[in-house]
Length: 148
Length: 155
Image (cartoon, rainbow over the protein chains, first blue to last red):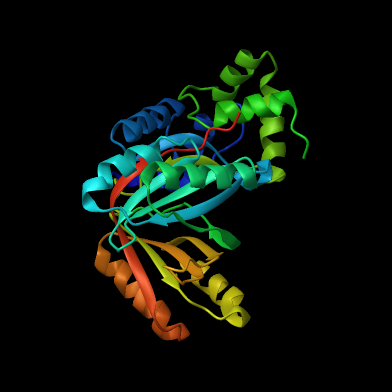
């Protein structure tokens, strides 16, 4: 990745200017034109470095509750479990991890009742126990990276 | 904070991807029938009130070279967990750190997400943290496949 792109991405992970012409503003800081900023960002998106530019919403501030769930899916059931879990809109992240508990997903809902219902439904549909580990305290959520 | 219809519409627009054009907020304002100024004001208010946690680019960390992603979990006594959680959180390679209610089959209460270019980096960091803070046994679970990764759609 070009150094200038690295600088651009580092700058806009959190400090995206909330002004009428944000890309122009970013360009001023980097010494390039608004058009160049827009072109670079289009490229960075096409190449898969940037997922999106927008707002990360604090779900808890909207009254949502969430939890981290883990289950143990036998190899022959993996595809089915993936399909069942992914189908829930409240599941935003789902990973296979290297452990006996091999499926880990985050699940959020608009109320504790909805959350419990959703987890129960996943358990019923997969036929597997779902272990829910809700957060008691958040020490850090900062999805910002130093680009290697 | 009581959300107005405009707040909800703005959240709906911003939870996706804003336009790569000179005035992306004007585009949103036009769609909603309000002024660009009002949109920007509302966004700033949502940010100040903590409803918008961050506004900016979300990167695909695997594609930028951070291929190793590990969930590291420890079992920490209640008396020291807050201090330990804050200390671990100060490390840049740690993006998330939570105190969680343990599960019977996974009896750990402090969880951290650690990222690195290669797995060895994550392993070394986890070992270093445990050693220097005297945390004892821990589990390190690498992600081997991403099955779903989306941003939640509210409203």
